[in-house]
Length: 313
Image (cartoon, rainbow, N blue to C red; front, side, top):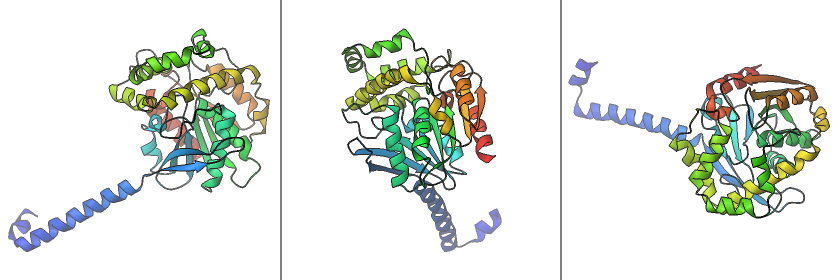
């Protein structure tokens, strides 16, 4: 090849280099165009119209990913690229989080969010969807499936990760979110990076320190004061719903469901996952080691392998 290159005319060399450059640019452009980011107006009964933000990657069967409390599409960054090689992955910012609209209202319960997710699925005309929800997003995924079970856009499968979907005991610190005015005063006075650092310290296993990039990624939405209201309103809704969560309605979910739990989850204990498995007619439970409540950050390879095994079955 070296000898052939040396004997080429300047014109021939230029032509070869130009062709190579065009090929490289076409690959880069194709890669860039594989990502679709947009905001879409969604209406749900009893709620004002809300702009939701979503990012889409890849092609194939549809995976829709709602995140947990205080998170955003950023939370899926470690597992999304691998999933997008075989699936059309839609990472969705729930109302009040990430780049979605953050209205100062009280419609932040799991049921409120599920109504918006179901409306998003209908408006985007998505079919045969697998919902993969983490924590609060897992509860939203379960309720979304219940909403859609009688329509043309029913959910095909579910993956529920460390979700507070049943009644449990919350810590005394969590109960402080009920104190009138206190959570707003604390959240307003606390820099976003410190908010993110404290939250990550709570949901990660001891010894798994968050990187500065992680802290900045989780902190970014909290620069919008609406995000702080959404966080507080959602946390209060979770505590209010905790009084009446028997889970009996989950028996109507017939879809194959994978429950993924961290063995030493201090936020939503493994016992909740085991109880949920007994309620869901077609569920299996996978238990991950060396994580607390954020497996997509703490043990992404183990989580990805667990997801792929279920999705490929």
